[in-house]
Length: 633
Image (cartoon, rainbow, N blue to C red; front, side, top):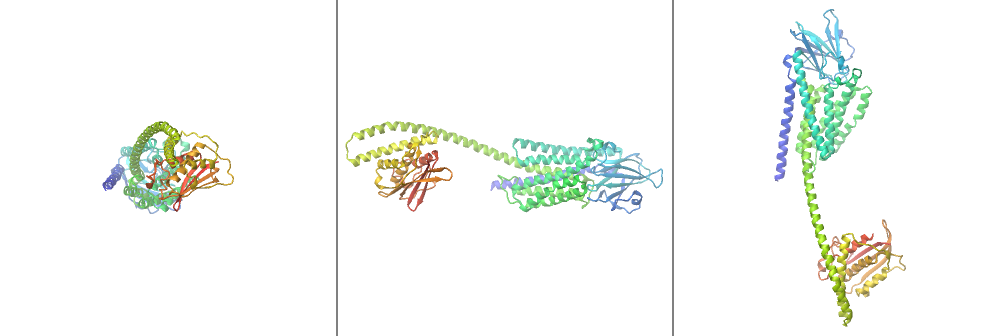
């Protein structure tokens, strides 16, 4: 109960931290984006959409424009967009007309020619124009230099782009424009520093303990940073003038790639939680559009490709939260963080993504800060995923530490067992050596004593039993140390069985079943005698008195090991043994305590059989037990 309570307390603290983090980042971005608004000299903005795309400035200037608050916002459209701005009267001579974002293709500024009535002066900029040829050379904004007038002045801006038609225009005095430019550079540096730190953290975790999801997070961070640098215009100054058009192409590729990498990352992250499988298949299917989109981009369908890509982003944003809510697995040892934390993370992720993507689609109101919303989402998403991976890394570290401790304990136990086994082996070796000499003396003395046959046979059998147990202990040590040596030579199975039956004085109870002719059989005679002795002794000991013992020898083949001989020993039993433990070392049935033995005969026999390439098995049939020994020929 305590661990469960700690788990929910931890989840609650994570939720509170995530909420604070989310709103702090939003507040910081709003703070930086609102700087300079008081200095903006644009007093009116109006928009007109040219459906044909063929209208000139003279025709457009006669059209009816619709007022807009801050941004021209038309989404992904093939229509040409016109923005009419009115700049307030000012004594400032040097004014800068700033245009964001920088991924807009063609922007043309029209202003009335003061020298010729009815004529227009025009200037053009955009991301398809060389940075070196631009009138206003700033990486993160397009724009033009204009002169302040004593009366309000009207300007027309013509926008033609394959990206989203989202454009913010402001007119600032030179110093105010430079100050705002610097603040926006600081914001981008702040963004890149956090993203780079998260990437280095992931790289450190990955190289310390390679993990598929952490490796993907490095790729995830790298694609987001490249995307940010591309859409903010930092690649333009790096390109030669003759390759300026590559800037637009590279930015489009970055936009497509970030979506593909993000989808794949979220797929791998969600999969251990076992969300709805059809939703996961849909998510993976959306990633499959990436090659087709790249193909369309390189074949001149940039507008259509980017529009479809935006719809894919919207669909993914609407799909991730239901997938997180449909998760069915929440095992703290294997899946971290828990489902509740994961669902809160994806709720914030979805909210952030929708706030950033809807204005780009032209489906919701936008302000200047919407231009940075996609970077805000990127930062929030990276921090959210960092929290997920950090908790996951902590859990993996805890599990690894636990496994190392368990391994260390297992090694200590193994060393202790090995030490005990060595001590036991030394003890058994000493005992067997010390007992062999007295047993040999007893045998010699018994041979010279004249006694009644039954009494003498009983004494000899007792000595034989003790000698047999000593031999088994010696063989057991060799088997467990894998020091047994095999000497193969021709063996006569029926003769060995007959000799053992005479030793145990049980030939009259045995029903032999032998084939007319046995194939030539090669085996280690000592090992063979050991196994057969154990099986026959086991039958004599545990079968009811005077009951029959059936022994059969047949030629048998094994599907995997080839030709061989099979020896079956079957006898009646008074009580049924535990077949699961029958071949375990030291196992003895509860009713066998009245008989001598250590419980190692069957264990030893199976080990010897396997060392010879054979097998020993047992089965019950009513109140009979049947041992089946197969050995390769």
